[in-house]
Image (cartoon, rainbow, N blue to C red):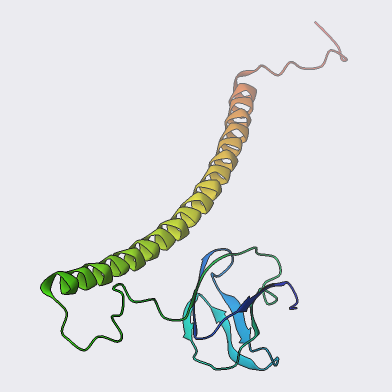
Length: 181
């Protein structure tokens, strides 16, 4: 367990971990991965986004953790994608095949690879959109508070000016305590 961190425990071999901070603070977070023996196989600090691939034959429960201990006042939203192992072949017995692929099989493999690239691009654009939306909402809140402050200052200054102008045009009557004619 980490101080102010979140850990996940998974069984895997040959992982690929992608992380990106979507909102909070300076958009950075600490991340580390430990093998079943407790040995740290990956550790990065203050990263906005990163990618980690590892191949191992050691089976067991691996731990990957995110920590925000250097920035205790800002809450963060972190996206992570954990892919385990290689993708199964699209066609049956594709790995054991001796002959070349037919034109139809080749087209299927190409379309599948292109669709995977589209999925990766969409994920990237969704993350950017979420990050930009978070920044826009934060900026909108700041602009709203600034506008309320300016409005209050405008009212105070206006009331002060009205009172000052009013004092110029009011007659000051002398006090009636002395001799009169």
